[in-house]
Structures are given as C-alpha cells and as structure tokens.
Amino acid sequence: MSEIIRVANVFKTFEINQRRSGTFSTLRSFIAPVKRTIRAVNGISFSVFPGELVGYLGPNGAGKSTTIKILTGLLVPTSGEVRAAGFIPWKDRTAYVAHIGAVFGQRYTLWWDLPVSDSFDLLRDMYRVPKARFDANLKEFRELLEMDDFIETPVRSLSLGQRMRAELAAALLYEPQLVFLDEPTIGLDVVAKERIRDFIHYLNRERGTTVLLTTHDLTDIERLCDRVMILDQGHILYDGALDRLVERFETGRQLAVMVAGKDPVAPIEGLPLPVVQDQRLIFTFDPHQISAPEMIQRVTRHYEVLDLEVRRPDLETTIRRIYEQRLLVHDDPNVNG
Image (cartoon, rainbow, N blue to C red; front, side, top):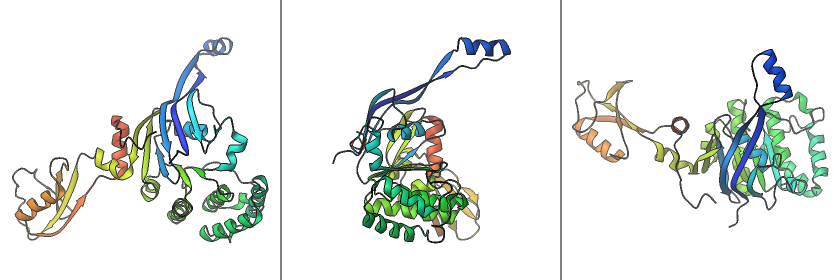
C-alpha cells in the first residue's frame, strides 16, 4: 500500500532578529540587525498510510505546528521532500486543498457573521460538491454532530463546542481523503469532547478517512489512536504503536492488594517491603524482571488476599519521562518510511 503522506529528511529553519538591550543597542539592531537561526524541524522522516489515525505529540515549541503548516502547504520546508495525497503541498496548493480538510482548535475557518448553513453552502460551491452528495453528507453530519439546534445561527453566536462541531462538519462535507486536526477538543467540556471524539472515530473507522491529530489532551490519543509520533526539539523521538509505548518505557508497576486481617506487614523474600496506602498493600515491581502473574503468585502465597489490582503507569507519566530524559527509540521499522 502506498503512503498518503511521505515526509523525507525535512528541515525547516527560521531567521529572527537577535534583540539587544539598551537604547543604543536597539537602534543598532535596526541599522545592522544580528540574525539568529532557529531550527524548528530537524530532519524528520515518516510515512502515513491510508486509513490511519495517527497522534502527533510534542511539547510547545517541539515543531508540531510547523510540520502541520508544511503538510497543509502553508509553509515551504528549507530542505527535504514531502508528498501528501499525491501532491507537493506548497507547489500544488490549489489542487491539493480539495483533497484535504483541516480543523484548528483556536482558529476560525467559517464565516463569522453568516449562519452555519450559509457557510456550508459557500463551501459546497467553492469545492464544487455535487448537490446530492453534499445533501447526504450534511444530513448525516447534522445527526452525528447534533447540529439542528444551531445550524441557522450565526457563527459568532455559537458556543465553543457548537463552533467546533460546525468546523468539523465544514472540513468534511466535501469528503477529503486526508484530514489534519489541531487541538480539536481544546477548551471543551467533557460532554462536548466525547461528542467530537465519537465523530472522529466514526470518520476514521467507517469512512476510512486518514487523520493526523495533534493534541495536548492525552485522552484524545488514548481514545482514538493506534499509532503515535512524539516530537521534541524538531526530532521524532518515537514513532510506533500506542500500546507498546508505555510497555517500552515503563520502569515500574504496582500491585495493590487488600488482605484479610490486620497482621503487621511481613517481608517477602526477594521483594521490596510494601507500602500501606488506603488499607491496601502496595508492592512496586519492575515488569522486565518479574512478571505480573509471578508477582501475584508470590504475594498470594504469603497473604490471604481479598482483592488485588495491577496498576501500570499512565500515558501522561510515560510521555513526560520521554520528554524529560529525551529518550529516543525506534519502534517497528515498517512504521517509518
């Protein structure tokens, strides 16, 4: 299967004026500015295949937004090769935009003073969507995104959750094969977030739309993505399966045990002494050295166990560790192009 996105050894640098302190130095900066080069994207390479829903993660300043702008044709890379949906985004932009959709959580694409329905009609005409196909899509999206209550309301009067639903529908009414979603749930309440996530899941699973998702809300990633890429300081630190990410980087799990009686905590040979927490004994162990079943077996031989739970580090803890230690791992070589 050929890639729908192929990024090969892409760099993007920006030159900015170096600011100087003091009035005289500031004047000199206007006459003879000193430039500083910032490398926002540093030789990244990856491929995305049709039908994938890929999470693209990184702290602020990691290079995520720069990558998305290159992929949508808004920026030209300093060097490297990019093809998306069969196009070079910045060279073929006029034809390319008919094949992609984009939703940016903190930017508006709909017409501010028009009712939502009028914005949709304008998009239909701009993208020359056949009326029957447009009407069918609009009917389905109105139902899935529950837009009937506000579709005749001007965009400026919508709540944030309503606007995001309208923006999603607008980006998809012309059936793009590739969609870029940048923080689609930012600022939304719990109910609105779940509605958006359900729609993205439907879009990908039922329609086969390829999605590249950037977000700081890791629940979005856990609910939607099978694959993640982690970017930091312009480098890809991880590209692989989400379910392997925690497994590869975890350094400890916990076995929380509720035991019968109130006998003093007794040591178990070869295991650290447990900590008592909320009426449970908490054993910390390294899964690379002792498996969870073996850990359970040893503890249940020693105590009369009423209840137990194996706790793994959450995704946020794992990703924070990758950022802080700048861990670099290559996952399945078939994932990267």
